Image 1 (cartoon, rainbow, N blue to C red):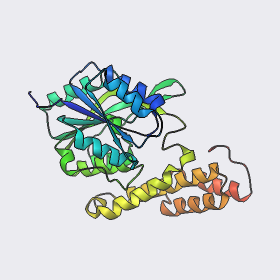
Image 2: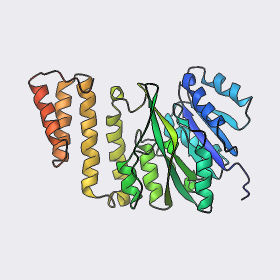
Image 3: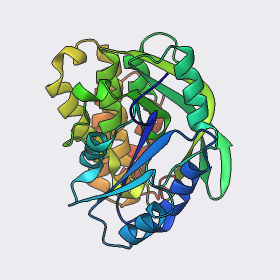
Image 4: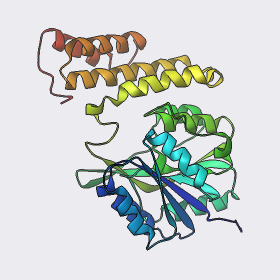
Length: 304
């Protein structure tokens, strides 16, 4: 099948991660499938990101560097999409990596489906403390909207036809759940295909945006509320119990951060909100026990 540009465009937003971005780009250069371009969008870095990327660009013309003033990763991804020329758009965060066959696996799946205007996503493994572990990823069977809300699908796993992204972009004022929101919106209009191979390495480390010290759950809560308000027609398709579970679990995440920061009042407040939002939850007794421990001033080491 002939296309004007490369088959794949890979968008990498980055901010002050020159020290690990090299590994991310190397994983792309190691691909066994060669028909790709990469757009690195530097979101206002103050380290030597420009020097690192431009030195690599000089050796591989498939890699392009773009700088923008800091506007967060959704804006950076949207900028990269606007500069991409591939038929399919892939994403890769600057601390994650592709396994060598990632693009080849995607190509095989896409060509098998006759190059549809659709979203594909693969499975992944986790890198933490220098050790790799395979994740037991649930299969997408029926409802992609509910699947994406229940199972976090990181951008590195996703490949989307460029025509999809002409109308559907990342919400730039939504953080942490901006990827989930986009996948759910895409699922309302286009086909979704789950490719079963493990082709992505998700790098878990202390600087991850979802690390407990960063209180990512507070941003997640704001993002979910914006999502439900902005897209009421999608909200109505989501079972009320699932919406309650999402909100209740996010309150629990905020409480964990407050416990980590030793903010007793806020921890109790968010634990109570979590319990009241979703009463019939497997962790109900655990949440009540945490409230008891905080009230009687017992140390909690679980979320340190």
